[in-house]
Length: 246
Ligand SMILES: [Zn+2]
Image 1 (cartoon, rainbow, N blue to C red):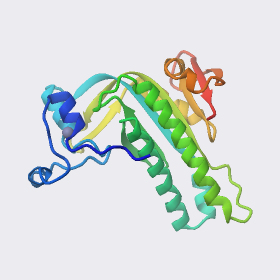
Image 2 (cartoon, rainbow, N blue to C red):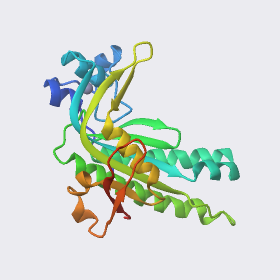
Image 3 (cartoon, helix red, strand yellow):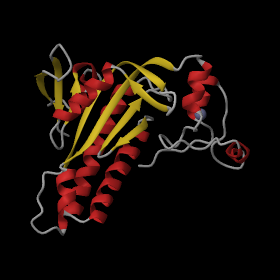
């Protein structure tokens, strides 16, 4: 499914009631001023990030958000065995799968970090059901990857590496905005991000590991999820987590 494309930037409209055209002839004059479609989400414009922080007169805003990390397991090892072109193609497929799944839930793909993806839900596009949308995106990423894997390995003789995607999701209050002065970067920071990242690190190929706060909003999507108490590096208390195997 492709995400419905909007004529105006959804973020600018929701937060500032400003209709910024991003498609069609009305978008042309804006493009002259450098306002383009954001790479993080096709229904946002490139000035959203910095504009919010300027409007709010703060470099960082604290908002309820859901953070999703997805990582292509076994990629490094596999890329040494297959050709460079195939490895790049595999990464392309993974990135594309992540983007379409995240955009479907109106989230942003904030960063690509090597063979991992950081996505944020509920900012700048506000969604009451952002937690659920993140879980749905995680499930869609896993589904697309399974489909793709069958294609990748259909003709590969004897290559049977445990390639798969590990996903971690957590939700809560997080700080979003610009960090750095010399090199400015728009990103999300806080314990929510760290926990989501740790959950992703322990997720096996094909697994989505979420906190109890996340599972509460999506238990009907995966009623057979396995409950686990986890001690995560850098986090004092053990975390009550759920492992989803869609
Ligand atoms: Zn915008």
